[in-house]
Image 1 (cartoon, rainbow, N blue to C red):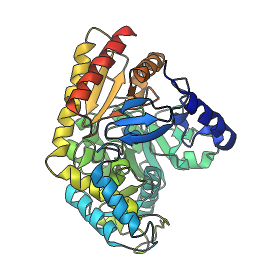
Image 2: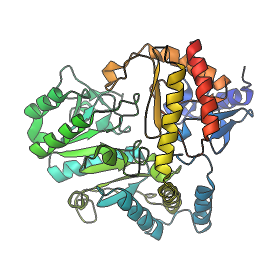
Image 3: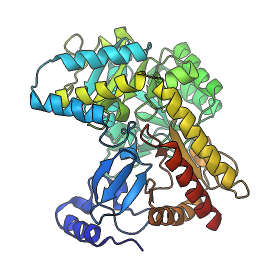
Length: 426
């Protein structure tokens, strides 16, 4: 058994001063049981908790750490920026350099704006498309998560083209009713929504590679359909690439599928480990933002020098020496090894780019409704056995795993063997 005495004591103290003891719900380990593990430091592909236990990390801060923990180029960039001042509240060169770098990697981005989180990026993009089109309603999909802004915390109503209902206390019904929640990979549901509400639909919002409710890899034909139907009805298409952006390649899912959305939202990798979000796309749409246009958006720490330096260092490093290709190949080999070791079990590992997901059924789901909920209990056992074996996975059956450039092939092979053995024992 792991010694977690210090973590247990810290969690007990946290419950007395932090709501729920955590600053983001999944960290409470409610889905997997046990005590939240308090991490003291990270280096490369490993994290070490306050009790001295070391784990190979496949959570990678939920995705941003594509270079691993405390990568020298990132540490140096942050140190140099901090030495010159942590925040100015003014314009500065690094925000221009990062914007130029993103434009060079993502040809579909004509203009961009930086914010401080993925939630803020999507919230701002939704306001922008409403301002641009003069329409109120947004289509989103079950199985796609877009942050915790009020309009997007909506669940499906009783029919395919009905108005959304709040999925969280504190969200006014009048807010959620402007969000139409549809099932993924269902073209007829989208067509029905446009038939009923077409003149008032500002945009379709989708994770082109949904990775917050399992890894639901979409058909290119379906995404192409969404592109066509939005153009037909004068609506816009937003790709939420907070997770997939710079994870499946330089141009994200937009490049992977060869589809150009009107707007994209980013987070995680674009900040390289510091709090950053961004949204961008067509210049004529982005021109609607203040101070040029009438759609207001602002932020005290938007584009702060530390975050910009960290993001720029990360993307420049990835852009050198074909790191995206190498990372994707490494991830594919890792997941192939696990699948080979568990081929006689109704459990599989899906992957795309440097993302992977362990799912407890024979058929790979591409919509939330296809996921076998019974896998949650099996994942709980897997998570805790993996922890004992020195492997840190996301503490939720519905969250994906991440591989970084810091994960060496040897340790990935060892982790694949251990995970395969644990899965076979379930």
